[in-house]
Every structure is written in C-alpha cells, then in structure tokens.
Image (cartoon, rainbow, N blue to C red; front, side, top):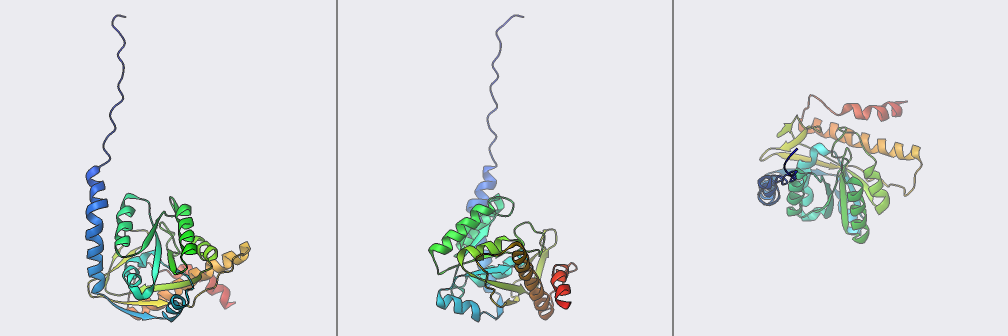
Length: 259
C-alpha cells in the first residue's frame, strides 16, 4: 500500500442546545414567576387549621410540610406569603427543573436541587443542614416524590422531620376551578384565574428520632392515609372531581382501623 496513513480527527462536540438552555435559564424564570405571582394574586384562599403552623412559627419550632405533588401549584403562592414563614423546597435537577427552581427562588423560597430520580439524597442533606442552622426555616416535601407512584408516601419526608426535630404538618389543597394535566404522572392540578382554593392543615405529627422498621412503616402509612383522606374530604367540599381518585392509597389503614 502506498501513501501515508491519514490521522482521524475526532468530531467537534455538538452544541448542547444553547438557545433552549438560554430560554430555560434566563428568559422563562423571570417571566414565569411574575406570571405565576399574578395568577396567584387572583386566587382567594380559604384556609383551615393553620393555627398550628402559625403557633410553630411564633415559637420558633421548625415544621416539615407534607403535601401531594399534584397540588404544588395551588400551594406555592399561599406558602410564599410572609405570614406563612420561610421555607426551603426540593426541586428536580432536570433542565426543566432548573427553570422551576429559579421561579421558586423568585417567589422567595430557598431551593435544594434533587429528586427521587437523581440527587435526592444530596438535596435532602442540604435541607436538613439548612434547617439545623436556621431554626426559623421550615421545609416541605411532596410525600409521593417527583416521580410517584402517585399518592404513595416515601420515607424522605419522615427522615427530614427526624433529622431536624421538626413537626410533620400534613397540608391539602383543592379547587373545582382548575385545569388538570392528565398526561403527567401525578395528574397535576393548576387553579384557574380567580379560583377559590381551600387549604387545610391537619394535626401536626411528632416524629420520634429513632424507630424500628415496623414503627417507620406505620408512620409512613399514617402520613399517606392522612393526606389522601384530607384531600378526599376537601375535594368533596370544593366540588373537585377526578376520574382517577386517590382512594386506593387510603384503603389499607382504613381496613386495619375498621378491625
């Protein structure tokens, strides 16, 4: 064979969609939090049971708010109001999560980046550290995580309350005037302009610093069934209906209690 061997030059790396990244990081967040704030200001909240939260804020007792992922949009505006205290949230590390995190920061929240799929343990540690260092800071977490299963409580919420010495406060929200994103795993509820939103806090739950496996599972199930039951009652009051309700998650504890 004649001729010298040709050296192969590795192809240049392809650009990682800089326009999309710029839009998600720079354009969408300031527009998004302002649009959300305007929407939130059109809502009327009908709050019940918040004396426990306000008492904890007055006493400097930290709280971990427990809620369902599907009702996030209805709750963010309410808990961004100064009377509800200061909060740290967890938000996904995905590119879309970057935009959501910046929107939440624009609303005045502290944000730890992570989810049940990626970085969740690191974000949980960040939230624990933040609450330990600032006893006036509260945290909140969707009991069913960022990927579900829908309505099924995971253990992160209990770990967060254990490690921070916080009371666990179940919080539900409901409105009949809403859109529902049925293609999302959690069937996300988005209140419409001018909606009246019912928000209810349940009885605070004290979480022991140490529990065996049986006690941990009993508490996990208690949190799950409490929140599912609160939403069933609140949805009945507001008139919100879903063709795929969360009743199944409450069945085990209900059946056990009936015996």
